[in-house]
Image (tube, rainbow, N blue to C red; front, side):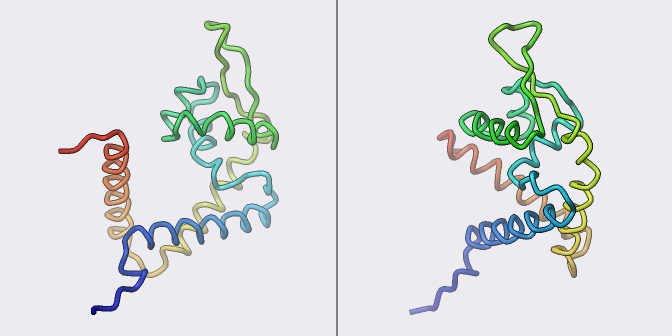
Amino acid sequence: MEEFKPTDCFYYLISRATLVATSVLKREFAEAGVPQVRPSYLGVLMTLWGHDGLGAVELGRRAGLEPSSMTGLLDRMERDELIVRRPDPNDRRAHRICLTEDGKRFRKPVQGVVDQTLARGAKGVSEQEVSRTREILMQFLHNMQEERRGIHE
């Protein structure tokens, strides 16, 4: 029987790389003086840094997050004083998600940590390989999202 190693599995490599990168980012955020920022917040923060004041549904869509995970994530970000929910002036039932002063001020150190950490992680990998890997991961993510929705070609 042929030996099978976990590193032969694409999913194993993706999940291990994510777990290790998350651990390193947590440590680096703490060392940079922004311990309240968690890697799971990055999609929301990056989206709000470009478009502050979005509604929760639109924010989740742009950040690529599931609606079912948004409420808890936003609760934690509000607890950590990175965002506030403000009433939507056009819809009494909805809220706009806005960055706090800390949420705005942390942009530069957070982006610096992310850029530096990922650059160290990609050491020995060419820019073309990083770009191609991003394309592959985007296609993989798209395929898995279609699979979850039950769309098969």
